[in-house]
Image (cartoon, rainbow over all chains, first blue to last red; front, side, top):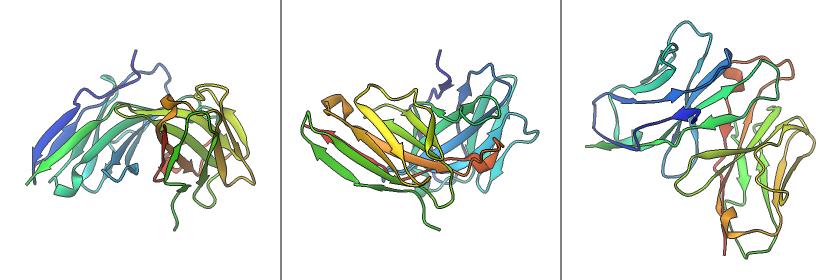
Length: 118
Length: 120
């Protein structure tokens, strides 16, 4: 089974509208972290936002927020007031494992290509 | 401050040749990671370093792949006898994950710009 599932290969959104990028995950470990990265055409992976499995509140970073629904194992990224510069690939990733180092790798989804239309 | 740097940015090689890819992590970051992104695919974990040791090498696809890290800083990923299927973007990341094993935003992985490897 896929550990990270992103079901939207591509999305087109009008500028200034809000957009939700879906991510579901699968793990039996109670301790995990969820990350969203942005990859523009330049290729560099840019960290956007993090949600820990024990965090009580949804993470927010500027225009980015994470809609964390633990029981449903979903961690959707919400971008408010989208801008042309938001056009990029977006990856959801998970780090799972106990608190000791040695289980640090990130497992990535296949990504969603977001295009903002002027 | 300076981010993760990787060199070369592009590498074209012939099948059967060896290549070395270099990664300079963010200063002070103890953890270093290598990933591979093939065309049309997501990112695939290769290896993880904590200091100079590699607790997790589970993602290395074959014994042609090896990596080392010296001085707790620079890392080199070596691919021997390259094959066409090795063509991909190789991404390096680092984090400030400490030996205490504390988790949280401090273990966020920050990525370099990648090395695009093309094997002809």
